Image (cartoon, rainbow, N blue to C red):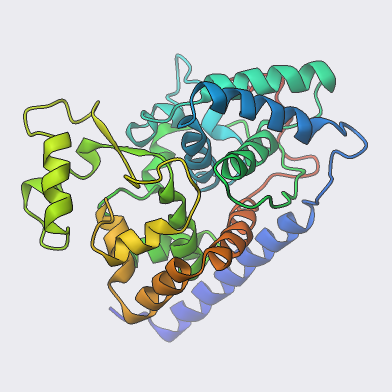
Length: 321
């Protein structure tokens, strides 16, 4: 249904004000924010992430997903780390976040940072650095992370309802990203993070049960063997990319073009000519994907950030000060 012209003007004005606010917050983030207050901060994060990924190489994908889930709920403010209390259920306990792993890694990194520079490095910045270091560990390019984020004090499970589900279609995904100041192009590029990590069978079992014709037949048969109907599909997992699950390459896009994207939200990237063209370009040029991904995740990392005197720097990422 079309909006009245006056309503449209109000919507555009509100959108302008919102984007302007994002830009002002973004301007307060800067590369090398801790160069004087905690010059070893990024090195400490990198060292601890490398240790963690040697023990469990797959958890880097969780850290990357954690960064996305944090930024899309109340902005990149570290609210994903806060524990539930007796009176409030936190984001991390929302159904969509129950499969996230790696919170204990964040605890370990934060402990090291506090020992080196007490009360200086925020949990939100820690996560942005950790996500970058996970990408680099998997073979992605090193990109500079603007920092200066502060931590939020609010975490509510229902706020996570905004996060997209595996069965989301293109229009819904596009609207969500635009609402966060990102573009459809950013959405397609950031979906490339699915080149690493695993998925629980229940996230795509509907496609198998319905014999979804958009899922390549041979791949579907292989998935049914890995995720049999009688198994516990909330526990059983499969790699997002069967051949290179721990390599940050652009093979994900080629899988999507071959109708072997695991989720409906993957396949939907080729539902229009424009997005299909972009998928082909990213899938056909590894360096282009790496460069574009770095640009888009830095842009994502500026969503709704708290800076200056807003928020706080938590000494323990799980609880407010």
